[in-house]
Image (tube, rainbow, N blue to C red; front, side, top):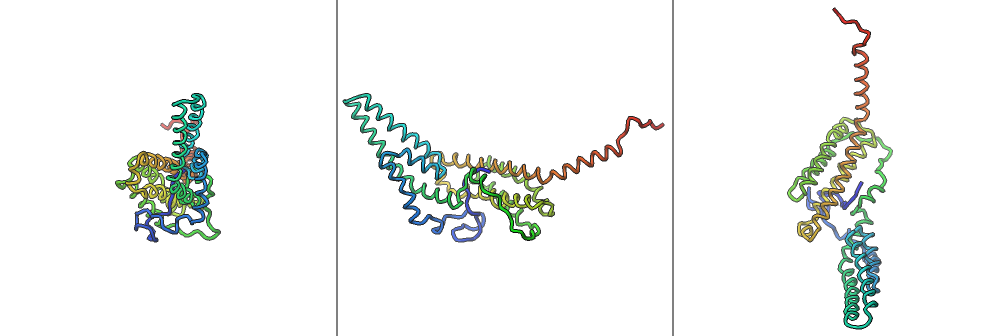
Length: 292
């Protein structure tokens, strides 16, 4: 499934959480260690040696930040173009201005790298520790399997978790279009949850509905709500993260439909078989004589 940011479930009452319904904040224990930060800051040497484009490719890929990949293209093309212009213009004012622009791009790439390094370190640490999960990583992640013990009877905890997630999605800070997708997911999952309460699901089906309801969907909803309005107010951030949210919810909607089809496939086959039996048992035959 998609992928996008995922964070530990909110409202657990653990240190750093804001209480029920409030996404957890980062604590000191969740920050990367000092030696790790130093090692992963060595990429800043690349802009110093006028290789900013390589540095932004590395950071963009490791931190899953497309914006930095776009800057890598800019820092690769602009200096090369300035060098060609300087060589073609020979000596004179244009050549001098081009060299100055080249030096400015060099310095700009170095300063830009230093400015994004903090965010790069946190995003990369979150990717490595599982706090930030992309769609590609989620698709590669193995399904959670239960220990070989007797499965406990289903309770209302899963349904309560789903109800809380839906309530959060209809809050004032959540995008309305995304809330409509959450409602569609809930409409599909409610019959499945009813089957779970009646102990009618297979173990793989039970695991899948638990993953969607208690892990994947809450992490997408609460992960978005974790961003403060002041952060989202920056240019393009709200649209960017809303797009990522919609991608995650779209993947979960497809997963919910697939799960529902799996759960009710046997009942659908039985319903069709019953129809064939009734048609064969009570249907009129062309050989029947009309009754007077």
